[in-house]
Amino acid sequence: MKKKVVVGLSGGVDSSVAAYLLKKQGYDVIALFMINWHDTTGTLSGDCSWNEDEVIAKLVARQLEIPFHAIDFSEQYRERVVDYMFSEYEKGRTPNPDVLCNREIKFDSFVEAARELGADYVATGHYCRKEVIQTNNGEPMYRLLAGTDTNKDQSYFLCQLSQQQLSNALFPIGHLLKPQVRLIAKRLGLATALRKDSQGVCFVGKIDLPVFLQQRIKREEGDVIEIPDNFKGYDADISEQDQHDLLKKLSTPYLYIPEDGNIVGKHQGAQFLTIGQRKGMNIGGKIQPLFVIATDVTNNIVYVGQGSDHPGLFHRVLFIDNHDIHWVRHDLEMKTNEIRRQLVRIRYRQPLQEACLYRFEKGLYILFDVPQQSITPGQFAAWYDKEELIGSGVICGKQQTKN
Image (cartoon, rainbow, N blue to C red; front, top):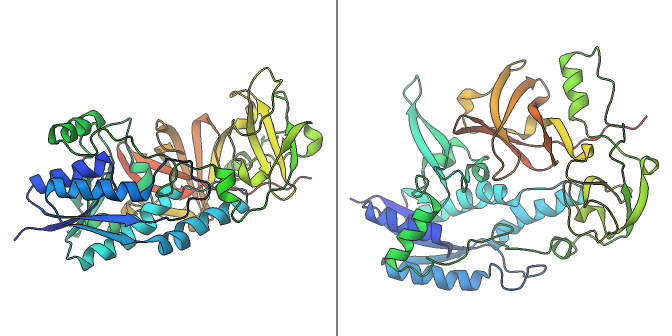
Protein backbone atom coordinates (compact mmCIF):
# COMPACT_ATOMS: atom_id res chain seq x y z
CA MET A 1 0.00 0.00 0.00
CA LYS A 2 1.32 3.42 -0.97
CA LYS A 3 2.42 5.81 1.77
CA LYS A 4 0.27 8.93 1.81
CA VAL A 5 1.93 12.37 1.74
CA VAL A 6 0.18 15.70 2.16
CA VAL A 7 2.20 18.44 0.50
CA GLY A 8 1.75 22.10 1.32
CA LEU A 9 0.97 23.43 -2.15
CA SER A 10 1.47 27.19 -2.00
CA GLY A 11 1.07 28.31 -5.60
CA GLY A 12 4.85 28.63 -6.00
CA VAL A 13 7.24 26.63 -8.16
CA ASP A 14 9.08 24.95 -5.27
CA SER A 15 6.07 23.22 -3.71
CA SER A 16 4.77 22.34 -7.18
CA VAL A 17 7.96 20.46 -8.07
CA ALA A 18 8.03 18.91 -4.60
CA ALA A 19 4.56 17.45 -5.25
CA TYR A 20 5.63 16.15 -8.65
CA LEU A 21 8.76 14.45 -7.28
CA LEU A 22 6.78 12.78 -4.49
CA LYS A 23 4.30 11.38 -6.97
CA LYS A 24 7.15 10.19 -9.19
CA GLN A 25 8.67 8.41 -6.18
CA GLY A 26 5.49 6.42 -5.75
CA TYR A 27 3.75 8.22 -2.91
CA ASP A 28 0.02 8.80 -2.74
CA VAL A 29 0.14 12.62 -2.89
CA ILE A 30 -2.54 15.04 -1.66
CA ALA A 31 -2.26 18.81 -2.07
CA LEU A 32 -3.28 21.04 0.85
CA PHE A 33 -3.41 24.81 0.37
CA MET A 34 -3.22 26.99 3.49
CA ILE A 35 -5.12 30.27 3.85
CA ASN A 36 -3.37 32.03 6.70
CA TRP A 37 -4.16 35.70 6.25
CA HIS A 38 -7.08 37.76 4.94
CA ASP A 39 -6.35 41.34 6.00
CA THR A 40 -4.62 43.37 3.26
CA THR A 41 -3.83 46.39 5.48
CA GLY A 42 -0.27 47.47 4.73
CA THR A 43 0.18 44.85 2.00
CA LEU A 44 1.74 46.33 -1.13
CA SER A 45 -0.63 46.09 -4.08
CA GLY A 46 -0.20 43.04 -6.25
CA ASP A 47 1.97 41.10 -3.81
CA CYS A 48 1.11 37.66 -2.48
CA SER A 49 -2.65 37.56 -3.00
CA TRP A 50 -3.78 34.27 -1.48
CA ASN A 51 -6.78 34.21 -3.83
CA GLU A 52 -4.48 34.13 -6.85
CA ASP A 53 -2.16 31.65 -5.12
CA GLU A 54 -5.07 29.29 -4.49
CA VAL A 55 -6.17 29.41 -8.13
CA ILE A 56 -2.63 28.61 -9.30
CA ALA A 57 -2.18 25.85 -6.70
CA LYS A 58 -5.47 24.26 -7.73
CA LEU A 59 -4.37 24.38 -11.38
CA VAL A 60 -1.04 22.67 -10.54
CA ALA A 61 -2.88 19.94 -8.61
CA ARG A 62 -5.07 19.35 -11.66
CA GLN A 63 -2.00 19.19 -13.91
CA LEU A 64 -0.35 16.66 -11.58
CA GLU A 65 -3.63 14.77 -11.15
CA ILE A 66 -3.59 14.86 -7.37
CA PRO A 67 -6.46 15.71 -4.98
CA PHE A 68 -6.66 19.32 -3.82
CA HIS A 69 -7.89 20.67 -0.50
CA ALA A 70 -7.82 24.14 1.07
CA ILE A 71 -7.91 24.97 4.77
CA ASP A 72 -8.17 28.26 6.67
CA PHE A 73 -5.60 28.71 9.45
CA SER A 74 -6.05 32.48 9.73
CA GLU A 75 -7.22 32.37 13.34
CA GLN A 76 -4.27 30.23 14.45
CA TYR A 77 -1.89 32.40 12.41
CA ARG A 78 -3.20 35.58 14.02
CA GLU A 79 -2.92 34.17 17.55
CA ARG A 80 0.43 32.43 17.21
CA VAL A 81 2.33 34.55 14.70
CA VAL A 82 0.83 38.00 14.10
CA ASP A 83 0.00 38.76 17.74
CA TYR A 84 3.57 37.81 18.64
CA MET A 85 4.87 40.13 15.91
CA PHE A 86 2.98 43.11 17.30
CA SER A 87 4.04 42.31 20.86
CA GLU A 88 7.70 42.18 19.88
CA TYR A 89 7.63 45.39 17.83
CA GLU A 90 5.94 47.19 20.73
CA LYS A 91 8.95 46.22 22.87
CA GLY A 92 11.40 47.54 20.30
CA ARG A 93 12.44 44.07 19.13
CA THR A 94 12.38 42.66 15.59
CA PRO A 95 10.72 39.23 15.34
CA ASN A 96 11.07 36.70 12.54
CA PRO A 97 7.53 35.62 11.59
CA ASP A 98 8.76 33.11 9.00
CA VAL A 99 10.53 31.02 11.65
CA LEU A 100 7.42 31.17 13.85
CA CYS A 101 5.12 30.30 10.94
CA ASN A 102 7.06 27.10 10.32
CA ARG A 103 7.11 26.10 13.98
CA GLU A 104 3.54 27.04 14.82
CA ILE A 105 1.60 26.59 11.56
CA LYS A 106 3.32 24.60 8.80
CA PHE A 107 4.67 21.92 11.10
CA ASP A 108 1.93 22.02 13.71
CA SER A 109 -1.57 23.04 12.62
CA PHE A 110 -0.83 21.83 9.09
CA VAL A 111 0.36 18.44 10.39
CA GLU A 112 -2.86 17.99 12.38
CA ALA A 113 -4.92 18.73 9.27
CA ALA A 114 -2.77 16.34 7.22
CA ARG A 115 -3.36 13.53 9.72
CA GLU A 116 -7.10 14.01 9.30
CA LEU A 117 -6.53 13.33 5.60
CA GLY A 118 -4.74 10.11 6.51
CA ALA A 119 -1.20 11.34 5.90
CA ASP A 120 1.85 9.29 6.82
CA TYR A 121 4.10 12.26 6.00
CA VAL A 122 3.91 15.97 5.30
CA ALA A 123 6.07 17.70 2.71
CA THR A 124 7.06 21.26 1.84
CA GLY A 125 9.12 22.97 -0.84
CA HIS A 126 11.88 24.09 1.53
CA TYR A 127 15.49 23.99 0.33
CA CYS A 128 16.84 21.79 3.11
CA ARG A 129 17.49 18.10 3.71
CA LYS A 130 16.76 15.52 6.38
CA GLU A 131 18.75 12.46 7.38
CA VAL A 132 17.98 9.75 9.88
CA ILE A 133 20.63 8.23 12.15
CA GLN A 134 20.40 5.74 14.98
CA THR A 135 21.20 6.67 18.57
CA ASN A 136 23.11 4.35 20.90
CA ASN A 137 19.84 2.91 22.18
CA GLY A 138 18.61 2.23 18.66
CA GLU A 139 16.11 5.08 18.41
CA PRO A 140 15.97 7.29 15.28
CA MET A 141 17.48 10.78 15.40
CA TYR A 142 16.63 13.27 12.66
CA ARG A 143 19.30 15.58 11.26
CA LEU A 144 18.29 18.91 9.70
CA LEU A 145 20.79 19.66 6.93
CA ALA A 146 21.35 22.70 4.76
CA GLY A 147 20.00 22.62 1.23
CA THR A 148 22.42 21.75 -1.56
CA ASP A 149 21.78 25.15 -3.16
CA THR A 150 23.77 27.42 -0.83
CA ASN A 151 22.09 30.49 -2.35
CA LYS A 152 18.61 29.17 -1.47
CA ASP A 153 19.31 27.14 1.69
CA GLN A 154 16.26 27.58 3.96
CA SER A 155 17.32 25.49 6.95
CA TYR A 156 17.51 28.72 8.99
CA PHE A 157 13.73 29.15 8.69
CA LEU A 158 13.28 25.68 10.22
CA CYS A 159 15.66 26.28 13.14
CA GLN A 160 12.89 25.93 15.75
CA LEU A 161 11.60 22.54 14.64
CA SER A 162 11.63 19.63 17.08
CA GLN A 163 12.54 16.00 16.55
CA GLN A 164 8.84 15.14 16.55
CA GLN A 165 8.12 17.73 13.85
CA LEU A 166 11.01 16.48 11.72
CA SER A 167 10.03 12.83 12.12
CA ASN A 168 7.23 12.90 9.54
CA ALA A 169 8.56 15.75 7.37
CA LEU A 170 9.83 15.37 3.79
CA PHE A 171 11.82 17.93 1.80
CA PRO A 172 11.77 16.63 -1.79
CA ILE A 173 13.74 19.46 -3.45
CA GLY A 174 16.46 19.94 -0.83
CA HIS A 175 19.05 18.19 -3.00
CA LEU A 176 18.31 20.36 -6.05
CA LEU A 177 19.48 23.77 -7.23
CA LYS A 178 16.86 26.42 -7.93
CA PRO A 179 17.54 26.46 -11.70
CA GLN A 180 16.97 22.67 -11.73
CA VAL A 181 13.61 23.14 -10.01
CA ARG A 182 12.61 25.79 -12.55
CA LEU A 183 13.68 23.51 -15.41
CA ILE A 184 11.60 20.58 -14.10
CA ALA A 185 8.55 22.83 -13.80
CA LYS A 186 9.11 24.21 -17.29
CA ARG A 187 9.45 20.77 -18.85
CA LEU A 188 6.23 19.69 -17.16
CA GLY A 189 4.47 22.85 -18.30
CA LEU A 190 3.41 23.66 -14.74
CA ALA A 191 1.53 26.92 -14.18
CA THR A 192 4.16 27.96 -11.62
CA ALA A 193 7.21 27.44 -13.85
CA LEU A 194 7.85 31.16 -14.42
CA ARG A 195 6.16 32.54 -11.31
CA LYS A 196 8.24 34.86 -9.16
CA ASP A 197 9.22 33.71 -5.69
CA SER A 198 7.07 35.13 -2.91
CA GLN A 199 8.59 37.91 -0.81
CA GLY A 200 7.91 39.54 2.52
CA VAL A 201 6.22 38.13 5.60
CA CYS A 202 5.16 34.48 5.49
CA PHE A 203 1.55 34.27 4.15
CA VAL A 204 1.10 38.05 4.43
CA GLY A 205 3.34 39.16 1.59
CA LYS A 206 5.47 42.21 0.97
CA ILE A 207 4.28 44.89 3.36
CA ASP A 208 4.72 48.53 4.24
CA LEU A 209 5.77 47.72 7.80
CA PRO A 210 4.78 51.04 9.43
CA VAL A 211 1.32 50.89 7.83
CA PHE A 212 0.92 47.25 8.84
CA LEU A 213 2.01 47.91 12.43
CA GLN A 214 -0.18 51.00 12.77
CA GLN A 215 -3.16 48.67 13.08
CA ARG A 216 -2.14 48.40 16.74
CA ILE A 217 0.84 50.70 17.34
CA LYS A 218 0.19 54.44 17.42
CA ARG A 219 2.32 56.83 15.39
CA GLU A 220 4.25 59.25 17.55
CA GLU A 221 6.83 61.72 16.32
CA GLY A 222 10.26 61.56 17.94
CA ASP A 223 13.84 62.64 17.46
CA VAL A 224 16.41 61.02 15.21
CA ILE A 225 19.81 61.52 16.81
CA GLU A 226 23.04 61.01 14.89
CA ILE A 227 25.93 59.45 16.79
CA PRO A 228 29.39 60.39 15.40
CA ASP A 229 31.55 57.51 14.19
CA ASN A 230 34.30 58.44 16.66
CA PHE A 231 31.99 58.09 19.66
CA LYS A 232 33.75 56.05 22.38
CA GLY A 233 30.73 54.92 24.39
CA TYR A 234 31.05 51.31 23.30
CA ASP A 235 34.73 51.08 24.29
CA ALA A 236 33.97 49.97 27.84
CA ASP A 237 36.80 48.98 30.14
CA ILE A 238 36.81 45.18 29.98
CA SER A 239 40.18 44.54 31.57
CA GLU A 240 40.63 42.17 34.48
CA GLN A 241 37.17 40.63 34.26
CA ASP A 242 36.30 36.95 34.40
CA GLN A 243 35.03 35.20 31.30
CA HIS A 244 31.33 35.47 32.12
CA ASP A 245 31.50 39.17 33.05
CA LEU A 246 33.45 39.93 29.88
CA LEU A 247 30.91 38.19 27.64
CA LYS A 248 28.03 39.84 29.48
CA LYS A 249 29.62 43.26 28.98
CA LEU A 250 30.27 42.69 25.28
CA SER A 251 26.78 41.30 24.62
CA THR A 252 25.00 44.25 26.23
CA PRO A 253 24.07 46.91 23.64
CA TYR A 254 25.29 50.38 24.57
CA LEU A 255 22.47 52.56 25.90
CA TYR A 256 22.78 55.90 24.13
CA ILE A 257 21.42 59.13 25.56
CA PRO A 258 20.47 62.27 23.56
CA GLU A 259 23.59 64.10 24.71
CA ASP A 260 25.75 61.56 22.86
CA GLY A 261 24.82 63.06 19.48
CA ASN A 262 22.85 65.68 17.56
CA ILE A 263 19.23 65.81 16.40
CA VAL A 264 19.15 65.45 12.59
CA GLY A 265 15.48 64.77 11.94
CA LYS A 266 12.19 63.30 13.06
CA HIS A 267 10.63 59.83 12.86
CA GLN A 268 7.04 58.62 13.29
CA GLY A 269 7.64 55.92 15.91
CA ALA A 270 10.71 54.10 17.18
CA GLN A 271 8.85 50.76 16.99
CA PHE A 272 8.64 51.07 13.21
CA LEU A 273 12.43 51.06 12.73
CA THR A 274 14.96 48.31 13.33
CA ILE A 275 18.71 48.07 13.82
CA GLY A 276 20.59 48.18 10.52
CA GLN A 277 17.69 49.83 8.66
CA ARG A 278 18.68 52.38 6.05
CA LYS A 279 15.45 53.32 4.28
CA GLY A 280 12.40 55.08 5.64
CA MET A 281 13.89 58.02 7.55
CA ASN A 282 13.91 60.59 4.72
CA ILE A 283 16.88 62.52 6.06
CA GLY A 284 19.20 63.96 3.44
CA GLY A 285 22.25 66.18 3.30
CA LYS A 286 24.67 63.56 4.63
CA ILE A 287 27.92 62.39 3.05
CA GLN A 288 26.99 58.76 3.68
CA PRO A 289 23.60 57.06 4.20
CA LEU A 290 22.24 56.93 7.74
CA PHE A 291 21.73 53.54 9.40
CA VAL A 292 19.74 52.83 12.56
CA ILE A 293 22.17 51.73 15.29
CA ALA A 294 19.73 51.70 18.25
CA THR A 295 16.12 52.45 19.17
CA ASP A 296 14.71 53.61 22.50
CA VAL A 297 10.98 52.83 22.46
CA THR A 298 10.49 54.08 26.03
CA ASN A 299 11.55 57.61 25.12
CA ASN A 300 10.70 57.25 21.40
CA ILE A 301 14.21 58.06 20.16
CA VAL A 302 16.03 56.58 17.17
CA TYR A 303 19.83 56.69 17.06
CA VAL A 304 21.61 56.60 13.70
CA GLY A 305 25.13 56.62 12.33
CA GLN A 306 26.62 57.48 8.95
CA GLY A 307 27.82 54.65 6.74
CA SER A 308 27.58 50.87 6.80
CA ASP A 309 30.91 50.74 8.66
CA HIS A 310 29.76 52.85 11.62
CA PRO A 311 31.12 51.15 14.79
CA GLY A 312 27.70 51.33 16.46
CA LEU A 313 26.44 48.73 13.95
CA PHE A 314 28.95 46.06 14.97
CA HIS A 315 29.14 43.69 17.94
CA ARG A 316 31.05 40.49 18.60
CA VAL A 317 28.84 38.87 21.23
CA LEU A 318 25.15 38.07 21.58
CA PHE A 319 23.25 36.43 24.42
CA ILE A 320 20.36 33.94 24.39
CA ASP A 321 18.38 33.45 27.58
CA ASN A 322 17.96 29.88 28.82
CA HIS A 323 14.22 29.72 28.12
CA ASP A 324 14.83 30.85 24.51
CA ILE A 325 17.38 28.14 23.65
CA HIS A 326 16.12 25.36 21.37
CA TRP A 327 17.98 22.20 20.40
CA VAL A 328 17.03 20.43 17.20
CA ARG A 329 19.50 17.76 18.27
CA HIS A 330 18.80 17.43 22.01
CA ASP A 331 21.51 14.76 22.26
CA LEU A 332 24.04 17.48 21.35
CA GLU A 333 22.81 19.99 23.95
CA MET A 334 25.67 21.87 25.63
CA LYS A 335 26.24 21.42 29.34
CA THR A 336 26.73 24.29 31.79
CA ASN A 337 30.27 25.75 31.53
CA GLU A 338 30.86 23.96 28.22
CA ILE A 339 32.59 25.83 25.38
CA ARG A 340 32.13 24.76 21.78
CA ARG A 341 33.19 25.95 18.32
CA GLN A 342 30.29 26.24 15.86
CA LEU A 343 29.18 27.94 12.68
CA VAL A 344 26.47 30.54 13.27
CA ARG A 345 24.13 32.75 11.26
CA ILE A 346 21.90 35.54 12.58
CA ARG A 347 19.76 36.08 9.47
CA TYR A 348 18.60 34.25 6.37
CA ARG A 349 21.19 33.91 3.59
CA GLN A 350 23.98 35.23 5.78
CA PRO A 351 27.14 33.16 5.18
CA LEU A 352 27.89 30.96 8.18
CA GLN A 353 30.19 32.69 10.66
CA GLU A 354 32.91 31.15 12.84
CA ALA A 355 32.08 31.53 16.52
CA CYS A 356 32.59 30.17 20.02
CA LEU A 357 29.55 29.20 22.12
CA TYR A 358 29.74 29.51 25.91
CA ARG A 359 27.01 27.83 27.96
CA PHE A 360 26.40 29.28 31.42
CA GLU A 361 23.68 28.66 33.98
CA LYS A 362 21.48 31.54 32.78
CA GLY A 363 21.99 31.18 29.07
CA LEU A 364 24.22 30.98 26.03
CA TYR A 365 26.77 33.51 24.78
CA ILE A 366 27.96 33.48 21.17
CA LEU A 367 31.36 35.11 20.57
CA PHE A 368 32.06 35.66 16.87
CA ASP A 369 35.56 35.59 15.46
CA VAL A 370 34.67 38.69 13.44
CA PRO A 371 32.32 41.49 14.64
CA GLN A 372 28.84 41.11 13.18
CA GLN A 373 26.77 43.87 11.63
CA SER A 374 23.28 44.59 12.95
CA ILE A 375 22.81 41.93 15.62
CA THR A 376 19.10 42.46 16.17
CA PRO A 377 17.18 41.60 19.37
CA GLY A 378 14.19 39.37 18.64
CA GLN A 379 15.77 37.68 15.63
CA PHE A 380 17.00 34.08 15.72
CA ALA A 381 20.59 32.93 15.86
CA ALA A 382 21.09 29.39 14.53
CA TRP A 383 24.20 27.30 15.01
CA TYR A 384 25.52 24.52 12.81
CA ASP A 385 27.99 21.67 12.94
CA LYS A 386 29.26 21.83 9.37
CA GLU A 387 26.05 21.47 7.30
CA GLU A 388 23.80 20.31 10.13
CA LEU A 389 21.64 22.80 12.05
CA ILE A 390 21.68 21.63 15.67
CA GLY A 391 20.18 24.52 17.66
CA SER A 392 18.84 28.06 17.72
CA GLY A 393 17.57 30.80 20.00
CA VAL A 394 16.09 34.28 20.19
CA ILE A 395 18.68 37.03 20.47
CA CYS A 396 18.25 38.85 23.77
CA GLY A 397 17.80 42.62 23.70
CA LYS A 398 18.29 43.66 27.31
CA GLN A 399 20.08 46.98 27.62
CA GLN A 400 22.51 48.10 30.27
CA THR A 401 21.54 50.73 32.81
CA LYS A 402 23.21 54.06 32.26
CA ASN A 403 25.16 55.19 35.32
